[in-house]
Image (cartoon, rainbow, N blue to C red):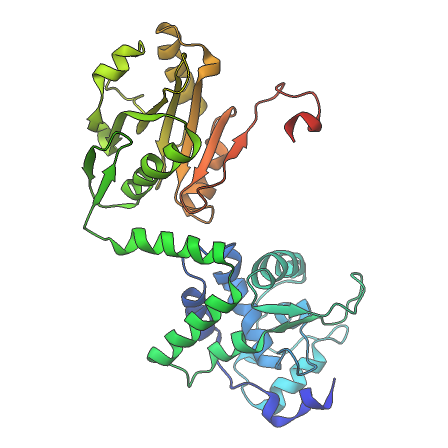
Amino acid sequence: MSSTGDSPDSMPPYVNRDVVAGRLQMIFPQGSRNRTYCVREMAASTVFAMLYIGAIEATGVYLAPKHIYRMTVDQALSATVEERRRYRDAALRPGFSPAGTRWYADNTREPIRDETLREGLVQAGAVVLRLDLPTTSSKPRYALRSEFAALFDPRLTGEALEDAIEQFQHHALSKGALARVAIVRHGAARGGLGYLVAFPNGETRQLSPGVSSAIAKAVVEVFATRFLVDPAVLSLSESGNKVVARDEKLAASIGLTIEVDKNLPDIILVDLARNEPLLIFVEVVATDGPMTERRRDALLAQTDAAGFDRSRVAFVTAYDDREAVAFRRTIGAVAWGSFVWFASEPENLLVLRSGGAAKCLDELL
């Protein structure tokens, strides 16, 4: 350890894990990249342990996963600088086990290192790591960025805390990450106001409040204009198959009959740029109801009966964000041969390529 790391002033003020957990929720709001890894209990334990031992950049003090999984309930309550230093050094010794009930077992080293640190806090600009150590070294290598560590000072509260968090977010998070946060926040902030959706032909429709409506609005106004050449909306429904808009005349002109039944998707789009129109069936997922294989097959039965070539039919499941609980819970049910789109990353499409479509990786690149 450097002399800087051992000086009394280098130790940050003691703060308990509950306070750390609460502030992580504020620092990484909905829409933040890999938010789960940055706000879960293990992340709070990790940041707490770094603050506890004083592992902050430029101090010469670094954390190893051992500092986290060897922490106990009793040790975490020992708040004096002397106790914290003692634990910092002792935790690295083989066989060390402080008094009390441990937070984690030894086998949590991998999720701490690979998920919480490398994929979470390091990617978010909250943690730095030593680059002078080989990857196989067991020496401590992680430290909090100084401006991030300052956000957990218990003396920092109220508007001052909010301002400091906002400054960190603008400096540490990329423009894309900040845009995702803003989009998700906008949807939440509208509350009971509902959404006015502008169709490609200039017409508008009012949707009820809620995340589903926010995603539906994005599908019509953003997805359709970005990925289709001459887009039109054939049908737009809300939960319970409540039809908000239906263009029967346009549907009939391309040979499609829109049946209001249990298989009616949330949105039916059409691209009229070619002689053979492209049909796009979209399921909006705020909680449940992705484009499953059953729904896809039921819709294909209708388009087959209408004489549509299957190459001119596409299926999309739309979510608000990759970090959304709904996406993680339902992605396993999304049909192969379909697309996934996120309102917070509108320029990208996730393609679920079905088996046999390509003989080698080159064909997918």
